[in-house]
Amino acid sequence: MIEFKNVSKVYPNGTQGLKNINVKIEKGEFVVIVGLSGAGKSTFLRSINRLHEITSGEIAIDGKSITKAKGKDLRIARRDIGMIFQNFNLVKRSTVIRNVLSGRVGYHSTLRTVLGLFPKEDVNLALNALDRVNIVEKAYTRSDQLSGGQQQRVSIARALAQEAKIILADEPVASLDPLTTKQVMDDLQKINQDLGITTVVNLHFIDIARQYATRIIGLQAGEVVFDGPVEEATDERFSEIYGRPLETREDEEVEVGESAHESSK
Amino acid sequence: MNQVNEQKIPKAPSKWKHYFTFILILLLLWGSAYQTDSTFKELIEGFPNMFSVLDQMIPPNWAYFDNIIGAMLDTIRMAVLGTTIGAVIAIPFAIFSASNMIKSTWVYYPVRFLLNLVRTIPELLLAAIFVAIFGLGPLPGIFALGIFSTGIIAKLTYEAIEGIDKGPLESMTAVGANKIQWIMFSVVPQVAAYYVSYVLYSFEINVRAAAILGLVGAGGIGEYYDRTLGFLEYDKVSTIIIFTLLVVLIIDYISTKLRENLL
Ligand SMILES: Nc1ncnc2c1ncn2[C@@H]1O[C@H](COP(=O)(O)OP(=O)(O)OP(=O)(O)O)[C@@H](O)[C@H]1O
Ligand SMILES: [Mg+2]
Image (cartoon, rainbow over all chains, first blue to last red):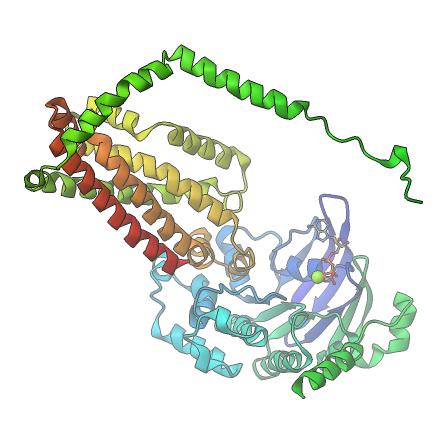
């Protein structure tokens, strides 16, 4: 369970990133955060594992404050939260398996991890995680030889190898084409359903959000302006809130689909 | 309509700046020559001398080769050891100089300053100081080369560190890595190839430097220059020069090839 209690964030330059947020995300939910560019989606997500510090309020995970955690406690809290980035953030020069195993460093001594002596169970765990996202045959390939969609699946595997209880994904499909978008989102959904991992995803497109979410949270100028199940997240409702309908991937897909068709001829 | 509005045309920059620079450079040259008492007359008078030395250098004394092979190997060993010492010490220096590793300017500015300071000291001077401390022999030479290469390797490496992709840094923070794991998993893979390349580059420089350190008594082939020049044995001098040149060329070639394959 992730709990935001009166959370606000003001950036040093005075920008209000988050404004008095009170949100509770239960275990096993698949929450999608939507909002226009600059609404505070990334700030929201990154506050959860403290890649960004909040300026007031408190965030608790399973009842334990991560806001107050320091040193080893913070590292252990982070170990339980997998994070997936828009740009994948893999070490491109390292092999796929090493990237996945890097999710295990929080479980072992510094010396052991520095020497790369991960126990056999860890290697199996990593291979299983890769298998779950259908990319195990690439385990010993250098990561920069993979396509974008494949790299994103490696980063999902890293979160799995981490044995994370929560997965945060900041626009995980923003740099992927429609087909790979579907594969990556399907993977996230499957993991959420099979393993009960609480999943919070930032998305630009409302149609993809509706397709995968169990709950949608709409942000605007750092404030929660919508919070409810998918059925309530209608176009009319969002037009009312944002003064215009949110973007959908379909508009884009038509263009992309056509040009892909052209080039395949 | 081909009359352009006079006021819109920018004024051509004055040429005076170029003339002034030119005159200033001439003055500096003349001043330096005057202060150091070097004249063209001396240069021309020295010419015949140069030819007579060259004349004595040819043919080289090939038999002398056997006498210096040990010293040449010593020179290379000094360079290897000096580079190794430098390569090891350079690692913490590079990390503590990089602004994306250490957030506090209070740390990385002083460390960088120290590095810059070290790099301004010529290795021959360093060697002379160490000879005064440790006595004659290769040891002070090795230390001098070690410090000298620390400066080079650390400087180049910290610049490489500052240029890395910060995405992996973020993801290692997010998985809960401690500082050392964070460096090993996100920084090292990104800079390792550069670092090795800089170590090789510094080794090339060190071989050349090691060849003259003997002039101040810090071991290696340089001592033989001193000795043979002192006895005016120019045929031996040319043997040493040719040998040194050959070794330096071969090492440069191998090292360059290796570095090409690294990056
Ligand atoms: N480091 C920062 N310093 C100052 N202001 C920032 C910083 N990061 C973000 N902001 C501001 O905070 C607000 C929220 O930014 P955030 O990145 O959370 O938005 P977002 O919803 O993720 O947008 P996008 O869809 O473009 O990714 C924006 O107005 C942004 O300009
Ligand atoms: Mg964002």
